[in-house]
Length: 290
Image (cartoon, rainbow, N blue to C red; front, side, top):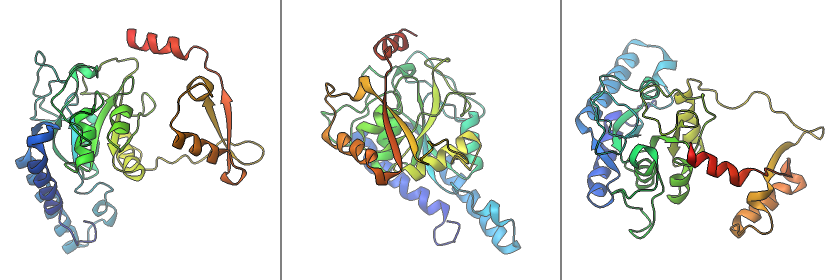
């Protein structure tokens, strides 16, 4: 888009065509705003054309998410679209975007619509969204629609939320990337929370790099890579591996064990060591109670 070989409206239109092709079967979206998305894309194209003609600010022309069609979980406010948090009982139509959605729009993202969520973010009930892998498979929750829309290509990224796995689980089950940020890094104004003390808002995307770009916009910091990293005296990254989740008695996928063995190799520049979290099982019970 920044080079001029693709117009924003063309990219958005192609994703909307994908929605038309996939939604009758997979039901990732609770509401699609095709008119609003195309209007926003056309506005971005006009701004780009004007800046090219007038020699405008180059930095503003190459916003990292310029024209990127994204979906937004139904618990996150988008101006003019209903927020139901996946519930038949709850509904509101906000006049303004959640702060995180406003930040994404500022960086050039285009909202395609709202995607299906498990009721109030508690990802155990049945939702109409189906897995791209097959109807018999679970989509994960509670950001089910977010993950499925990205996996199907009916969005290039999505805004989800996570209190106990609601981004990470659907990302894993749908073959994409999801990030649960540190609490407090991404604002929650305009978001219906499952748990105010543990919930976070975060991105889902097809690649780690795309997640990084989305997270940079959502957190308000384009540069998200750490400038300083604490290392051991040998100059290696230190990674703690929770013994209770990875010990010999745990049935890990062999590919995960292979990856861990690779991290332990001297040439990897990574020091992996076991740590004990004796309360990890108790923590799960406490989390579900909260």
